[in-house]
Amino acid sequence: MSNLVQSVFCLLGIIFFQLVYAQSLPYKSADATSDYHLVWQDNFDGNTLDETNNWVIEVNGEGGGNSELQYYRRENISIGREPMTGANCLIIKAKRENYSGKTCTSGRLNTLGKMSFRNGKIVARIKLPTTANGLWPAFWMLGADHLNVGWPKCGEIDIMEMGNANGINNGTQDRYLSTWFHWGESWNNGSYPNWGNEYTNATSIQDGFYLFTLIWDDNSLKSYFGTDADPLKVNIVEMAISGDAVAETTGNYFHKPFYVIFNLAIGGNFTQIWDINNITALNAANNYEAKMYVDYVRVYQLGGSNEVYNGPALDTSVKNGIAIKNKFDVYPNPTIDNISIKGEDVPKCIAVYSISGKQILRAFDTTNISMSNFPSGEYLLQITDVNNKIELHNVIKK
Image (cartoon, rainbow, N blue to C red):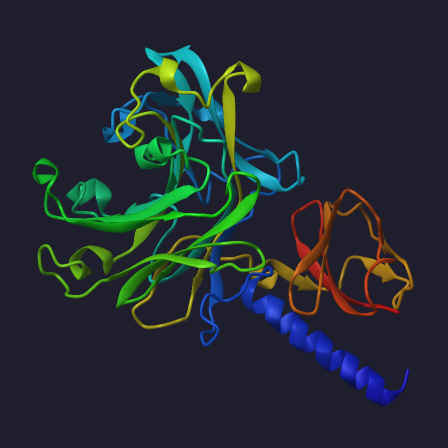
């Protein structure tokens, strides 16, 4: 290989590595003019939930303040693979069963006391269950001062909710979602301030993984629905947050750290269903169970003076979860068809990305992948080992 070709290849490798390094894993920046950097993530790898650093599992049958039907159990939270894609995920299971005076069970977890932040970008990749009539999956946040000031004074950011009665009444349950913001000094008989919007997609969004994003700065809250190829496909709603430390102004409730919550509620006021016999999502065909899969959740920030992050530090031994070649050998490189990976153990996952950052192949528990059908050019090989450490290799397909 000539020095010129080597220089060009190295330059391409550096540019591509910087692209991925900036986001930790391939995810388009929500704002192409901004240099977001990863500050926290959970990719839900391994076999158990990280309750030491990241999560608190809730156990109660209080109904969430919305007359929900479920009892939240620890047993309904697990880590495992989504069967269609093999992606390792957080799994929240809803189940029709009698337990502790309730007619069904499910799961809810949060990062209160583990991780909270103010301003930045948070994104989750989620495969939603078939909500049909009665399931209420949600990805949302509450102010970290919740236990001290109560609700709605703590503020609430519902990034994604599905299962609303409007979708049920319109027959659009599988493609109707919403984002809402709630705040105020008191419940005030339901007259507290709130703002939000609904979105109905053209097709079902319960058939695979989709991205749900919140972009948050001193001036506004913006929520998005998207895909891997187009993370910010739809801006669901944008709300200005002005004013500070003045009751009832949005800035008084959204200029502070918030923590993250995932849950899968059953019935209640949101769905307008309060009888387990009317929950059609849990039926004999699915063994009276439904599951919500979360592939990952990540928080990014710009490094601004008004940003706040409270939580565990990223693993500094592998910057942003990524290492440069140091454990696995990849050969032959360049290749005509197959790539082999040699190391002390079998890779847990191998992913191949195009030069634009698009994932084009993902394989599990293998040391060999075929690139015979790939166009000639440069690619990035991302290898995850059994300890969930990631390293990158540039490869050339002839």
